[in-house]
Each structure stands twice: as C-alpha cells, then as structure tokens.
Length: 259
Image (cartoon, rainbow, N blue to C red; front, side, top):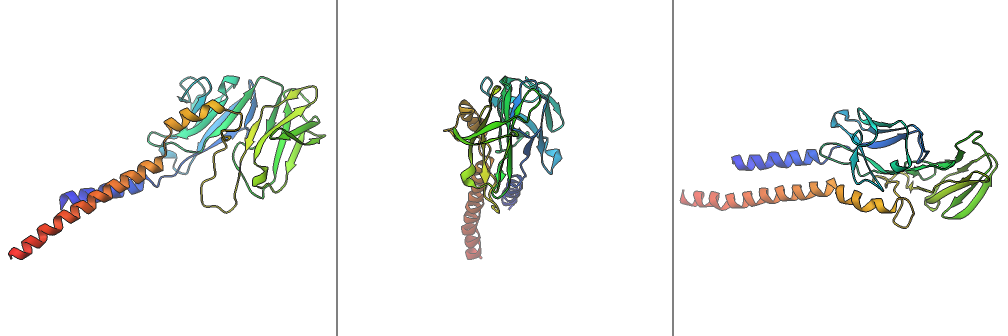
C-alpha cells in the first residue's frame, strides 16, 4: 500500500512539472537586424518570475553560451548588450535550470550601412506589418526598394512599407536596398494563423533560407522537447501503477478464498 501511494505521488508531481509555463523572449529595440555598435536588450517574460529564466544563444562561432559568460550583462531575467558586434549574430532563447523555451529568435548584426527593421516575433494573420529600411547615418527615411524572396515588391519614397492584412502568403525572406548606401541583410517573417490554440512557430528561417544555416543542428541537439520527456515519464509511472494493482489483485483473491 505504501509503495502504491509513493507511485501516485510521483505521478502527480510529474503532471504538475509538465504543465509549467514557458518564457517569451522579447528584444528592445524590437527588430531582427541591428547595426554594429547598437545597444540591445533581451528579456525573458513569464508570469512566474521565480522560475529563474536566463538568456542563452548559439552563433556561427560558438555553440551554446549563457549571458554573462562570454557576452552580455545579466540583469535579472534580462541580458543587455551595450555594443553589439557582427559575431553576436545568431539564435537566442530563454532557459531556466530545468527547462528550455522552444521559442527562439534570430538576430542579425551588420557592419554595413543599411538594415531592415522587421518584426522579430511571428505576426498574426490579418494584422498590418510595417517594414523600415534604415541607414546608419541621417537622414534614415530615404527612398528604398523592398524585396521578398529575391523579387522586387515595390519602391517606397520614404523608406518604409506597410503590408496590410498579412496572410500566410506574405511569409518569406525580406530585404531592402537604398541607392548609394547599400543593401540590408535578409530576415525571415513568420505569419501565424489567427485564433489558433497551438503555439506560434519560431521566427527561425526554414532550412532553405540563408540565415543562419549552420545554427539549427546544435540548437536542436541541446534543446530536446521537454514535452516528450514528460510524456515518457508519465507513461512509465502509469505502467508501474497498473502493474502494482494487477499483482495485488491475485493476492487479495487468495486471502478471501482461504477465509
């Protein structure tokens, strides 16, 4: 009886541990591209601040590193980069002591003079999205040409373009060009369905896109699905409970027969 109670307690603990919330990483200023030398702040936002979320990353030069070890300055659940460099380009996510968020963002840092300010997080179907082609020097609102998947969309005289009521067909790889200044890096924009109960996909470009191609394997290797581990643990405990009950039933019947 005591062993069965212990198994029931373990089962309950496992259920509770698998229903914890995950943190959402936000970037300030809100952009997926930055100029070399910009100040960038990354924050893990979650209802339960006691979870101890921190920011981790994977770049083309390093595998998995924690904020404050080789880069950035920790500030609670945030991480500040006072002067970002091109080597800081990569994938960023939130992680606590016993769990990792599966929502990653891609940040690109350029040493050039043009960037495309686009949503760093997935956008919802039906929303309006504004893209800004920006130069490092003033004025920044110069005429710019906008491209999607390598094809010209249109040219805008003030350097910004608004996509009204975005749909899944607007999902893709965007960049811009300002004559006489240069071309921005490319950034992937993800569009999610409205009124869906499933978590939105990460803003990481698919394998066919350019940035950053070599980052996916290490991140996928180090960040296994927490949900899968929970499912296996729950099934294992359930099997033990059933096995325990089955073994006890013949014993009880034998005792009753002897009586």
